[in-house]
Image 1 (cartoon, rainbow, N blue to C red):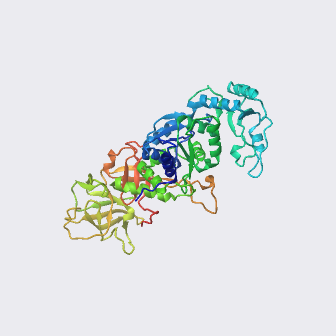
Image 2 (cartoon, rainbow, N blue to C red):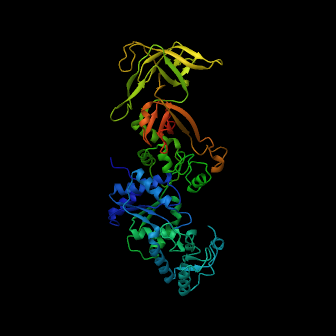
Image 3 (tube, rainbow, N blue to C red):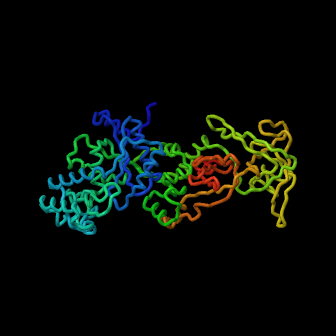
Length: 546
């Protein structure tokens, strides 16, 4: 059976077969005005995946043409996130590396009569642009001579004019059916210190002008971007041709961006949450940023698997959040060690057991290599209160008065007595160990259906657990505004007791808290104040697991 190809790969195959290109060259071009989020993971997987599949190249290029919103903090975070996701770039570049090239291209267009300096304000340009059904109106400055345009453009560069007082526009067609071709602005005056070039420039190119020049200058063969740039493709092609770049020219290809239910895909709104203190920062474990997902414990392999499964298409759609969680759960089911944790502790005293021993408990039965850990066991334990019922419902297989249950990896115990306080609340269970019932060595002959987790009372560790939900609530009655859908209950802080083995856990180590869910040790956790973030629950709602 032949390998299935997506439409981008089919285009690339055709270009290679025709001899149009000999080496496939892509790029990932984020703007350093925020942290990467899960939506960027799809673009990363496409661009770097093509590099791998075709033995090609892929650059990391920061599109830093707007110094008022960009920062080196974002540059460093993006580099770190890409490396964490498992990708390596061939060249690390900045759009600002090409500011001289872009300036020369603008001068070339002016000399060719294909660009002019306009004194119009942004509002005036917008008013004259026209509509989808009406042609635009030509700028009163469109007829300026080449000499005057050159003089004004050089004066813009030299700082003569204030912000917004002049722009350079491409001279294309004010009657074009594509609004992007109606004399778009390609340079504006902006007196701002740039993170990479400092105060060298006070004019900056617009994205639609800069991006095709960067691609052409680097020799990018396939410029892959999301669907919102489809209407910009004619301008992309116009720029590279008008600036006289040699063949083969880069080809822009658009794909559908990733949308996930109840997931914020807007860097602007994510920044708003950070600035307003509604989250712990860009790497808050509730955030859909790659840094946040990493802190939450999502394995990079699971994100790559998710992007591979959803595929590449030209049609916009929305993926269920539960599908992403299912991919994460599939990975953790194979890779995360099982440990025991108790969230609502109820003390158990084993009245016929006075010893202390180290039990060897299996870490993960689904792992490629089965390993074991040592778990202390003694007379006093904690179980979860939900695993005992004073008045049990029918078919109750956990612990009850005069009932049996197996302690995971340990013994079968019998509940002899429930000690209550003055209000009738159970505060302690007195139980007895069934002789010869040790896990792996059981000859007691007693069969039990219930197996529960526990922790040793003397050696267990007190930890803080963050129970996490989506930052957005479900859409109700057509309300889609992020501000109205912000989930105030998205993080719940609860205490828990965990087994002693977690005292040696390292930041970002992932575990399954048996019968509870998957958790990760927070990167800012300390030995005296351990913090675990919930990754995903055990239940797979996407695949309908019960």
